Length: 200
Image 1 (cartoon, rainbow, N blue to C red):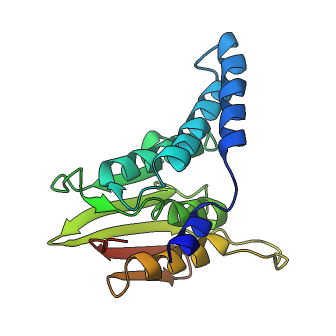
Image 2 (spheres, helix red, strand yellow; image 1 turned 120 degrees about the vertical axis):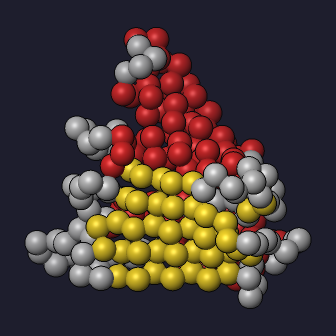
């Protein structure tokens, strides 16, 4: 089980990419640390840092997982010129203990899918996310618009992230999770519910 989890979390060795990103940032920031290219590289390097140094643990504090997700959202905002900061809404209940344990990298695949398959022109929200704690159950809800192609898209291999996530949930939260992905004519609605993970 431990070997399979390691494989699922490490599809690539990210050390080379992480070091390269830091080198690129040092070059772009010489011109202007606030330039969009420099900001993008810095955010991506932060994502890789979390992947390298935090996600190897069985669990991380929820505050770190949320911070990682917020870095991803900051990077995605660069794809939405002219959109308000509120177009990526992420409401986090104030009563969630910051040290609540969660297996790392569980929320990101769901949010990535929203940007890969969702409607980035949807307003007022491109994505609307909510994180709450109901007694001992952590609940993550996400809603985003559906991008409808004018022409049928060619079938391509995909869905690896969601398949990977479902398998990790089976291993880490056996009988202690529920993942629902509902699709309407206009929206995707994802609900992930977790009980505290069992020790590996």
